[in-house]
Image (cartoon, rainbow, N blue to C red; front, side, top):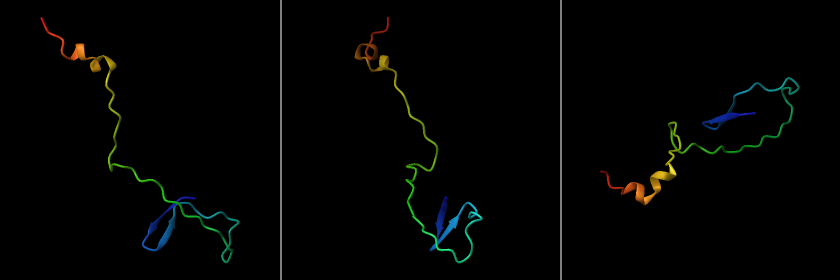
Length: 62
């Protein structure tokens, strides 16, 4: 099950299974999810190998 923390409460995103009744004892394990480094979408920039070639970079144009 997934959920989030709000104040000192755990808010579940899914409904509890029907087999769990009020008064039942349950075990809860809390794990932190890794946060995204940036609050916006990012993508990996690629550099073509040919542009890392020194001769290509400093090539004299005719």
